[in-house]
Image (cartoon, rainbow, N blue to C red; front, side):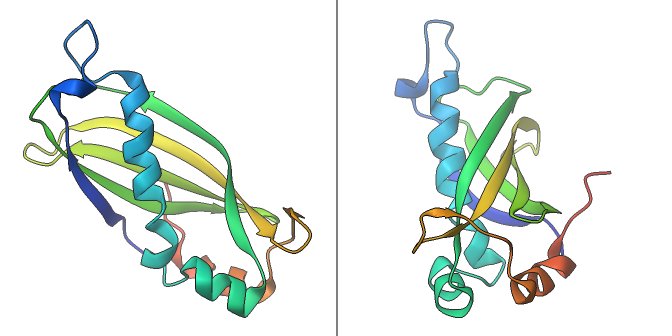
Length: 141
């Protein structure tokens, strides 16, 4: 499966810090909003995952890599891809691009854990869920 466009946004002046570019604290909301679209874009919205498999996912870790600054008025596009399947978790990478120039500004590496809402604990990935996700994994090489 290819990279998926998840969301678009605009950098506003109130995102600036005292250096005149978007402060690191404002990357998180953009990436977090985009991450909510991942499962739907994969054809497995949370409602379907819970109904069919009895699980959903929760974010266990997220790492932002800052590549090039953004300033007020910049338009952004965030793409994402499923990059890893584990026993109880999945890995995603999101990439923030300048919507006009295509320049990469930041990446966001995220691990989500398969979660059983009844036990409130991590759970093994159900085999049918793994089968549905396997062909959608994108290599980062």
